[in-house]
Length: 106
Image (cartoon, rainbow, N blue to C red; front, top):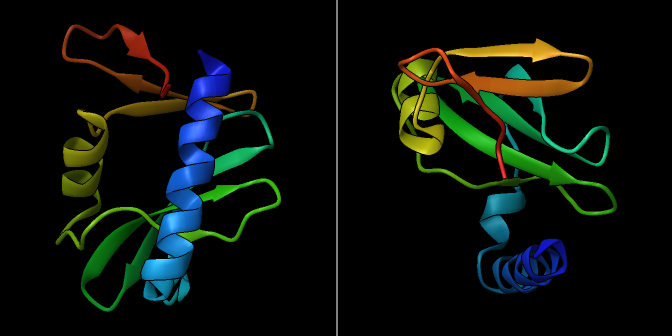
């Protein structure tokens, strides 16, 4: 399953790199960092003027924007990850559901 996800990401990355180079033009300030896969991949929240964007960076790849613009950090997290509640522990991000169960990003 992990190989399939990696292959899907490689295809996605190649397509956006070719067809949407503007997504690699990272502007603004990094507001929050969420480790996804130890030190190999990271999800960032970027603020540019009054807009918040989700940015993904995987080892050996350029960082790129993966969400539309949102007016708040909480909206970005809620719409992208299903919750705006989170905890970080030992280079891992835990996102908390309504019943306070933790979930990890896939």
